[in-house]
Length: 579
Image (cartoon, rainbow, N blue to C red; front, side, top):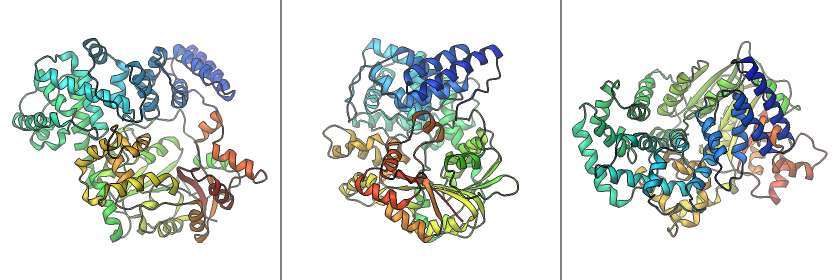
């Protein structure tokens, strides 16, 4: 599959950009990513809105090994972060790495010690367009940058309390407040700042309802770098009821993102209907967890250049599929355990002529998804509250990602999903691999308490013990390589889940065989990435071990490979078909 441009601007510019994108794709197939990056950059010079170039740059940047600062790459990543075709999540690591080198921060597996930037450094920071866009659009995963930004946050607060923070600091202060909102206030707060925050919370509650001035806007934003404005009920009510017409732009955007959007999501909750029978008792603890912390935390979804046929894509990837089920009218897709709806919104944008039923236990999670779907103008998703174990109906396709391993009996959940598939229907499942969770279970044991004994406000402290050099949990600092480590809901889902089990290929094979469905194959990368960057190491191992089995569809073979490569899988993402 080759990326194709659909630019509708200047025909000559679009034609020049398309030619350079074609050249870039050729270079990628020749395994020349840096030359391809240059060609995509040239495409942007011809047409600054070229979606194919933005997508191509993102694909390459996500896989680059960045060992130093590059101003041209800084400009390219900034362009991608600001583009509606950009993918901020994919750019989180390269952008964070670039900023790390930009500010001379050392490599470390631990969070860097707070280092106060000098006067000239702070002046540069507040004008750094890439830094501000990065804080606004992503959830930071870079520990060196986290430590540095914590020190910047402290310095901004200090300047404010001493009267030295002018209006020119509002954009950076607002960006740090938005980053705190994005990561759900997961950064640790030094003990020396707690008293000021407690006193400021009381002050802000007293100010609730008063007109916003430049100074009070700054006070709100400085506080919001540390704590959630939503937790101050009088202030929340006052800000939501006030006209924002005369507010500073940075403050208006920050209040809308931190308060306004959440208020709109809550108003959507009564409109979400109940699907199927009553909830099973064993599902209640999981529902309660995701009501308290809707998951996953996502901020954007990248629109596709063009829509694709879901069945044709699957058949092209797995030619050994039997004829697929197909409803009259749109393809009917069930997405149980959809959480906050990201995968449903992604699929609704990407696939042509589909109707998606998105189901979850948690009403707040579903409201988040419904709000985001409306924000992106998507009308072909039905968000409904329901328990996977009581689902009914018949669907052409089911996509159930990261859900079954949180059931008391995952095999029973799998059988229930199979019962909801039409003959010829296909199902995509993701499960935790046992080997990839060993360090997590060791950490849970070290914490020495049950999940329910850990209050949410302890998560930043526990996390700090993991990533602080010399911390008593520093042996587990490798967990910081996982994206979920860097937000509160993600940390809880990753490490402190109320119910979890893990799989091996052997257990997976037995589950599939017991349900009388056909295993089709594992999925290691999206088709576009596979075509441009080649097969994964796991697929290469399979072909080498079993050269005559071309479908890669034998679970017995995969079981043999896993026996000698225990860490082959991080998770199991696979397709099966009901015959």
